[in-house]
Image 1 (cartoon, rainbow, N blue to C red):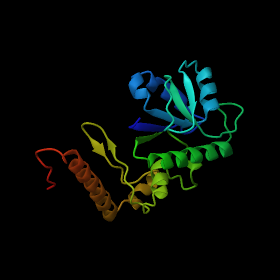
Image 2 (image 1 turned 120 degrees about the vertical axis):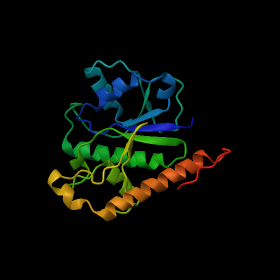
Image 3 (image 1 turned 135 degrees about the vertical axis):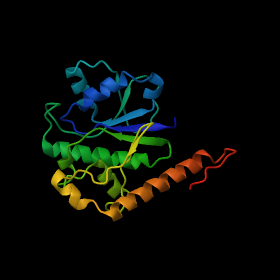
Image 4 (image 1 turned 120 degrees about the horizontal axis):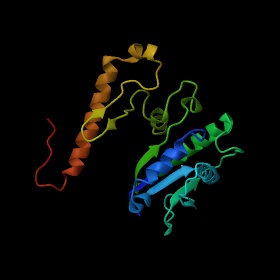
Length: 208
């Protein structure tokens, strides 16, 4: 099956599992089949039990393992814990990094159309508190400050110029060079996307 979506469970000591469960209740079974949760099977099982969530859980080895049964497919990432909502900082850090590394590797496959990450504690990745966007950018060997975070809906698109900065440092880190670089990257991405969308159309997209 193509068009798979990878969902990274994120911070274990959080409400992420509750958010995942509530979101699953709002989507169709057909769409749910495309989703693979990257987390720890026993962690989600115990968290769901405590939250009285009745979603059926299925352990799989990869996003390319096909299961005919309906339920939330979980790719099991190693995690040591006693209390499912009180995982130690050390184990949580190792777990999150393993999950992101695995998700990044699998997302390079053409059958994967998207990667969604649940929130994490930024201190987990680095003392400088950079987030998942920056982490994945480094995994993709993108130069520092060249990554672009674009938040989009049908009516609006927003690109933060700075991310994960103390408010007192924001003005110091914004430069005209950084703004121009991000605008150019967004524009290039949109042009490429439009060209692909209109490749087989009668009328071609022409960037101004």
